[in-house]
Image (cartoon, rainbow, N blue to C red; front, side):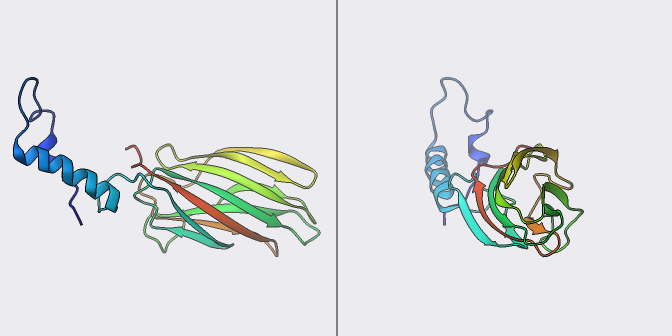
Length: 172
């Protein structure tokens, strides 16, 4: 696997009217290969997907800029239940949950949310039997250091998630 090393391509080394060195040309070649191979530290350009039933955890998200989650749910209980998300920066310890949406008893539907790791925001929409709601909230603990994102539900509600991790490094 090629290494992702930008040290030969700094602004100071790439001056106006200054020719490329052989080392710089090789660095450009190696960086392109490293990005395509997904080398450690390289910018992500291809999306990765994961799926599972709640509680579902998307792992190894730290090299991505955010994610889009499509969540199908069914609340078979007669009481309101919650769709929730939690964040971990060490893959095992999850902080407080953040509400994605409230699901009335005997309701089913779909939610689509975007989590932006750089801003810590979650935006989206929850479509359910009887209506819909918009989501625009800061997610507790969501930063560009996030390593795992967990989607959960309250009570006896069931849900499944399809997660699309977005390419690109999160802004710092």
